[in-house]
Amino acid sequence: MSMQLSNIIESLLFVSAEPLSTEKIKNVLTEYSEQEIEKSIDLILEKYTSHPGGIQIIRTGGGYLFTTRSEHDPWIRRLLRVNRKNKLSSAALETLSTIAYHQPITLAEISAFRGVDATHSLKTLLQKKLVKIVGRKKSPGKPLIYRTSERFLTYFGLDTLKDLPSQEEISKLLEEESDAD
Image (cartoon, rainbow, N blue to C red):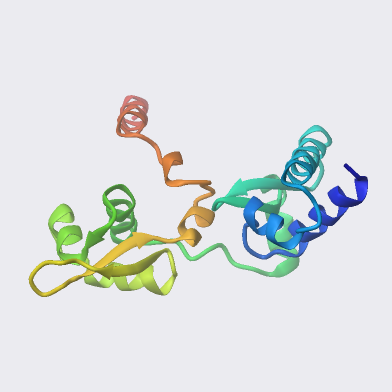
């Protein structure tokens, strides 16, 4: 395995605006074996873990992505003159969590879980590309079916949906929070 391969993969990660999956890397680097590519990825990850600097490589959205370290965020925002991310309303967060934990799901099912009409929140989530339409349910009226998107994973720093907190973890956090009050 050559140092050149590691440098090539590092360059691919650097220029990619979206998380770059191992599969995409393999599709680009067809002249290298799967084992060589995976070993090079492991070397790159170790390099950024063992010698932490201003940037890091994280695993998110099913791939790898260069990011800045969160502790440098105030200065980066100052440089870029970027305001904080538009926060989601509590209604949008409730709708999003309902979709995340019960997907695939229809609007009627979302509204039933929440106990209120979720149309407006769902439109917001679609505009922000945090959810997507994945088809129609085979039931009367053929309602649209919704799922979270890859952007949802990236937005929340998750690699897969399996990284969502379990019901037990959520209960424990809420219990700790109420004990602190």
